[in-house]
Image 1 (cartoon, one colour):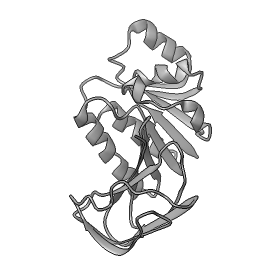
Image 2 (image 1 turned 60 degrees about the horizontal axis):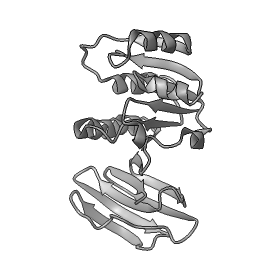
Image 3 (image 1 turned 180 degrees about the vertical axis):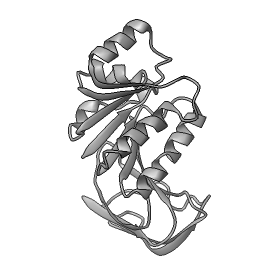
Length: 212
């Protein structure tokens, strides 16, 4: 199962949702639910405090959502965190988050950090916008397919260091390399074949595929 969550980020940062027909369950977060409905996508769950929608809009969401969950405005979690927690109950194979970047930087940063507990549950954890595909990874071996939407590929350490990083099929290959947080060594790489692989043995690594 693949789950898509769409938050209330800037609309111009949300890619064409028609590219994501493989998503099985859609969750709308607050006003992000309206974006799904405007794209004629069936909303399985709408969740949040809905403080950014008018009453008429909330009624429209309620009438066009299989499951509606309303939370108080004053709470410990953000609406997106609530949506992630809800998605995790399905035990999906992958969770794709849209509308989580492009606005306030504190929101963008914490939304990226929300990917870590997802990855720790062995669920593919991804944020997608018009310019970036951001995936949180843990030690292991991964295959990357060439994607014309996001040709640049960077690897960013989230932990103090990453050990044993090996890149094959890339313009700049690596073999068993240690990289430290703060290094720019692994920024702006590209595939030289249809597929490449990366692997590492210790640490936390953010895979960022992007376009100019």
